[in-house]
Length: 595
Image 1: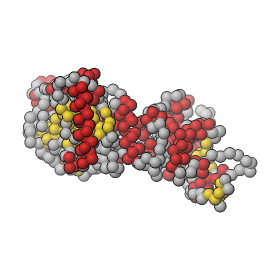
Image 2: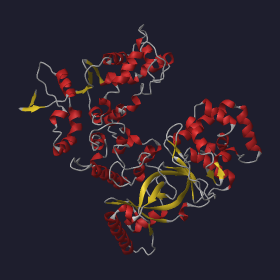
Image 3: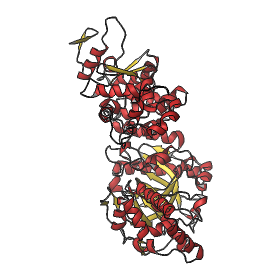
Image 4: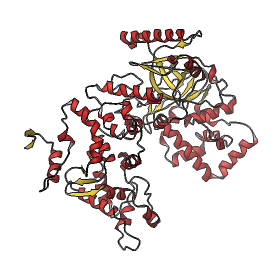
């Protein structure tokens, strides 16, 4: 039985083992969150969270308890000990070099195979998956990692993971391993080293980056996916001044999304949903599920959300915004109000892919066969770029015949590369969608057409056949880039305006492709009826619409601008913009209400 302040305390099994290990003959002070914070008192938890970074930073030592000894944990700790002490160049001990040879998960097994298996087991322990340990390690100075009776310091662990700069050149050629990459599968573990370095140099990262970087972490309380990161984030005090466990999960997640949007106008966060879309919690469609960012298998979303560049700036929104701020980005309760343009509407959709061999969704053949791109070469280039979601074509590739790669996708030479390099997902997708039509032509026929009838093009084809190694490398890269897009479940789409692009897995024919202020790429919105919204949401929308119209009239806006029908977020879209016949300024402008 444990007694704390005269009261009986029920310690968990893990805490019991940790306390037994830490017990010493002399008196010493130990702060343990599970003991010192009343986990049942929501108000106390809210207060203590704000102090935790300071507690860890000021501690003389922080002890990380991985748990009791397992059958192979001592072997793992022994391996870490070897890796943490690189020998000097004159040493005859070859243990370090031999251990490094098996550092990669794909390396052949050797004398350290069992030790590396123990290493894998050690870093697969539940401790490394907890959201709360991120602050515990990132904010601390002297850290001791304990497993059973074995221990290692954090600085020794760092050397075991990354080596020392002075030894890289000495052993690199001998061991043939890349010491800049995570050992084994530990890339799944939070990058404590980068965050400790940033915090030590007073360059803490924003909360959004912390949420993205820690997306694979686990928390019993979904609110802790946010609260556990407040102590390491540069902007957390302005986004969430006081953590509050009295707020529901929906309130915490919605309040954070609202604060982020109001802070910097970055609307790209509203597309941070998995391929199944939103739905776990009863939040507006524009609010991310901050506990499910690990479900997002479309990595470009994170890059776009974290980027401050390439955000859409519409001339109308800028002009009208100077007259009345109702044209800016606003959040009123559960309604997001933003200016933008209805760019086009989805007309046709290919299937997506669930895995290497299984298509998802049904083909929806387009009803329009027009094209928004000039000439055959123009729309073939648009298709090439759409399949890899190439936002901007590098200048060096503009005249290099990049559409030749598209031409080979279903021809013998391309099929050889597809088979030899294991591009099974692309092969399955092409097979499932060979009769999907683009500009009235099936995908299978389009990829086999001779794109251009000129001497330069024919010379390029001859060059591809003569220089097989260069061709194979380019073809393999192109296929890899396509599969990166397909792995996210994206679907090839055509639009009523004759555009090509890739659409979110949940997209439907009839969905709107829109360009919104504050976003770096197009978004798919789905109009929703009053019945879908419910009476309360409809009343709030009508009230906000009246407010906006009155504000604009008072400001002297005599030009009526459209307030579009209520919509919900489906997800992101890629549309090939380059080379369009019609400028963006000619598409309908208005204000969107997103629920």
